[in-house]
Image 1 (cartoon, helix red, strand yellow):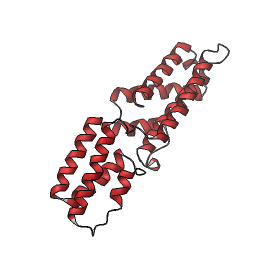
Image 2: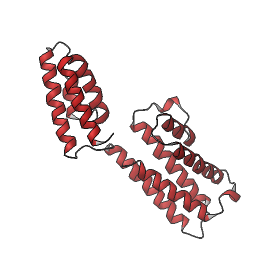
Image 3: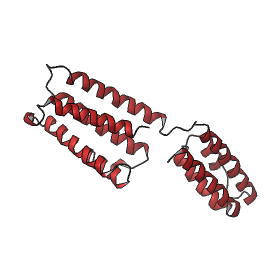
Image 4: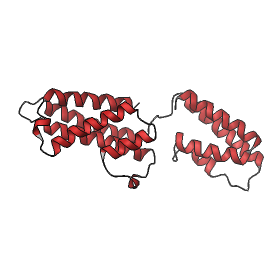
Length: 204
């Protein structure tokens, strides 16, 4: 969701709260839980409001908190991804850098960096779902399962899914010793470039 959309949704909830304080408070809490985070003062402030409070008090608090949140977002202070997610992405990026170094080493078989690239991509998808609050125990721990779920949630495109499946096939060939499928160093370089672009696309 863009900065403008977040601000627009905040204003809409404020309007709802004017006529329905309980419903507005409920929506505001869930909205802030998702887009601000459970550890923020925005969410915590509204979570502390008791149901016994007057409608006027609820409406006022929702207005104050969301107005403050709007200003926060408008000033560009809202992270599009969590700090933990940023660290996870940096770690995966480091692995991809190692894969690139191996790929440039003529003494190393392309299968080795192919396995690292595939594992890095799998970790990127897994932590993406985890960061979004998805229950990973409901699906298999695999590249295909993670990408299929992200497509089901419309987080990635059909073409993205096809690309991930293709990269997963290369990784599997390398992991199972099917050397003839991973001997082409140029093919693995294209895989690395594709995964890097994919991650950059969904890390902003």
